[in-house]
Image (cartoon, rainbow, N blue to C red):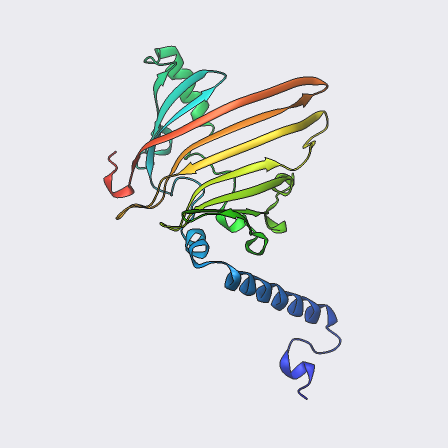
Length: 245
């Protein structure tokens, strides 16, 4: 029988910790490979092409509705950072000079495009379990990697549902739901959170693209009830090679 040190050169005494980490790492890789082998081909392909946000370098028009107040803006990453966002409309009309000035000051503190709620790599692949399916669609429930939870551990308190179009093998939607009431900071308690994102089907020369997000939040801040309904509509996506400064 081959010795342990022969199979794993790093497992030489007295470096037991290194040996243990190596064996555990191989076990994790084996579990991931087995999970991938057990997943249907359409799910593996959908995950390979899944981009949770708008792809880097793409421009888009974004309409955000919060408390029945709508704001429409345009993002063009081909422009300098300070000029990438343009306010187009506020509450269905052209913005006033004062509104535009306030908007530009606010946007200057958050350059770049909208940030996604999570990345594809945050999903724990072995956690995806089939919930339901028919001839054209399937739903999978899953969770997030321990290493992706972040300092506030928010992703660890959320349940993930992926909706997959089996014909085009793409993620057509995802849903995030709060598993149970959660207090991210002292004095704040989240009692309800639901986020739904929708994606277009891929086409020739065009990937699947984020088209909308809706969210509902309810909770308390120091015993005072609070909540918010939010809708984001993404349209007029423009590929990097089609953008102009």
